[in-house]
Image: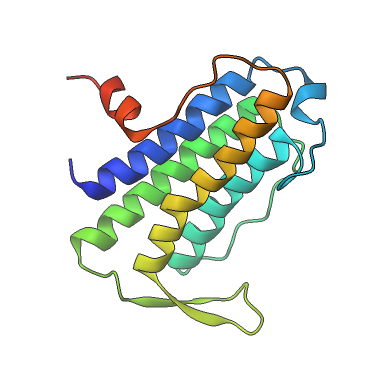
Amino acid sequence: MDLLDRLLGHDAWTTRQLLELAGTFRDEQLDQEFDIGHRTVRRTFAHIIWNIECWTDLMQGKVVRSRPASNQSLSMLKERHDTASSEFFRFAREVVDQHRFDETFLDTLDDPPKEKSLGGVIVHLATHGMHHRAQLLFMMRRLGIENLPEGDALSWELSLPR
């Protein structure tokens, strides 16, 4: 297992752990507004997942898929997360194996469009979720949820089958 496997494996696992935990929440908890980030647990998950989907499409030169409604069920968010994480991991692995870190693509969502490197966006996505998971943990604490997962890379690694 190399560094990419660890970074992306930990990122996907940790977000999935929080999605599983949120699966026990009532809709009122998922949609309660907080004065932070994307304001609700549900919208924050939707944002994390949309970023993986969007950037993976852009890096592959695909038309960016339509942004789904932000009121999706947790089961739909889990499904989207698993699919998006797998697609991103496959593409990132290809970039690393082919040493294409400095290859650029046109980010057509910028106005005007800007060139971005594949390596830069892979690093961005590997760290982006961490920022928003911290916001999710804050919201969950404010909701009174106890025994929240730490979500660190060593816990992820210890969870892997030996």
